[in-house]
Image 1 (cartoon, rainbow, N blue to C red):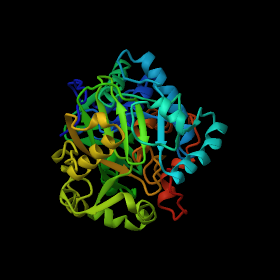
Image 2: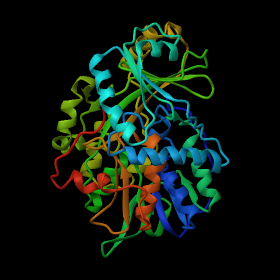
Image 3: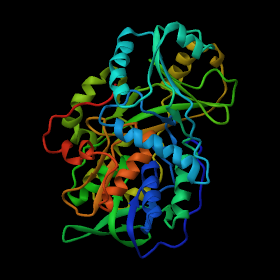
Image 4: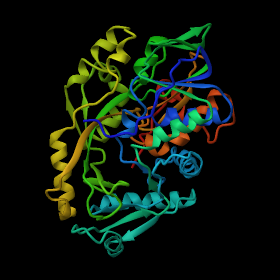
Length: 440
């Protein structure tokens, strides 16, 4: 099943032209639309399904600086500031709260990893605190697990995946952007090496610049235009309880994660536990992803599933340049993996007996678009002038979405970037540069 997400109306008429066309209505695309429209640029955002229909509504909702890869930390700092501003500026609730995030473990090696990161975080202005076993118990009194320690980030927090992207999209519209759902982008219109528009299923929109924020579809969308973007989809599963008594807010543990939602329900998952489907696109980029696959071997399963023949990584999409591919799958909605649903519930119940036998509101699957080094791409493209790519967020995109959208908007109109954009350049993935695998 798809997770619930607040629905908004589309604008009735597709504009003939816009300063910027944005392909993709997730958290990155709507954030970029908001910042551009607020500056007075005309913006048309097109989405083949509906706003936040894929990964932007299927995540935990965490907005954090704690335990970020060093390349992501400046952008995550910008994003936290922007989440605060959204809460004040939009007039629509994004559900953002600086509630603090807690990490607890019974694994010495993991605790040592967090302790190693802490000085770096402190040097970069992150309020981060190592916690003893006794302090963990004070912060998480309802649990029965014997933790040896942990770490907390009091200024980190969460937003509501069901509310955030639609609220930001409405904010963009209030500044003049138009939102077009159920309208798939088919291809770029390029003249003399420069993008001049986007061909959609409803017609051409002329544009001075284009942002591809198409998530798991980005590589396939750009490939016919000679742009090589190594990308892999990783299938993950999350579940949601019905509203229940409060047993703690946001907690990461070695074998589960829990997030309390605004309505008192919980989103539950296991970090990094996923399935990699063998697909033609995956085989094509296997060399680029092999180092990351080796590093995460214990946490992934290999499988052959529907994605071999449907969706952005399929054999059909690789062999045929059929522009209607994007409208044939309006929403990537992979089935939740039942073995993982059972494991999530068992792991959470061992730490919190209150979850034993709890009634679920639902479970869903997600296809997380990943880059070979697990760091996003936010970059101009060498082959097509006026085109910016923002994708490959590797499961980190929701919390950093506002910052990624801001940086992408600045690259589109040649403004001074809010952070150094070099770590996010596309060329690092395709020019033979040694890759440093991100994440803790």
